[in-house]
Length: 256
Image (tube, rainbow, N blue to C red; front, side, top):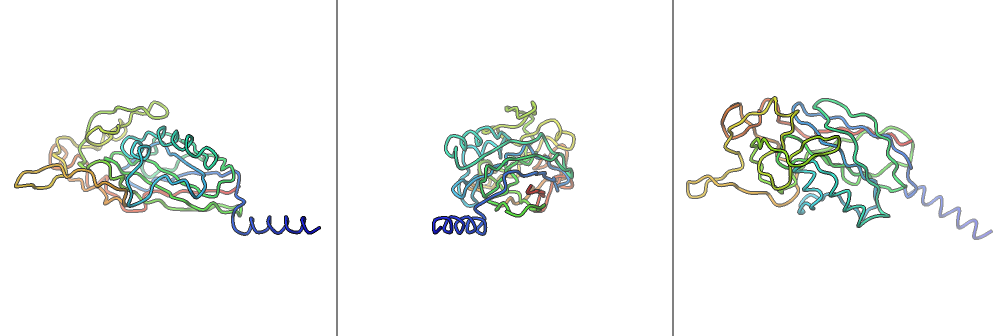
């Protein structure tokens, strides 16, 4: 009798502290910008010791691959290798156009208590939208959360149209790549991009403009600068199209 009483008490404690989590979620994401696309989304249910990104710290190899080229495979593989029992991840969807909402995704959490997500903003050098350690509610219902844009700090924000794609994402979508100068510029973004920009990530050193380099750590993105010169200027982004204000995304999460 005492053992049964203790077991029941433990069960009630777990429920009240949120340790017992929903098994299945229905998730969609809305792109709130007017000129940016989102790459396929990496969604992760996890325990407290799993961290996709941390402002003020250096981006991991996997986060860099997403922020510079939209490739979720490296980070997903690293999570599976290091945290096999502490997380479950899945990559959802194709490119998500500005001012549009993705399809609903059904996601099994395996009872992990936290939810995180990362997706690249294109065309940018290394910007991503991120959800970090969102506590999954235990009460069934529909919840809404907004996401800010972050800078991975791994590449100078030169805002130059690279015109090249070195990686292919899910569904055969051409994306930019890690170590490729300039912005990832897959086909859907080309229509409103300029060319011939000299780069905004420059600073004067002894009267000579030099690349100021990457910032070195993850931080809230400053937004793109852009200009209104489609065939020159410092940026190949259009300041009337590509600029944004945080938050850049809205997630709707239904706890089933």
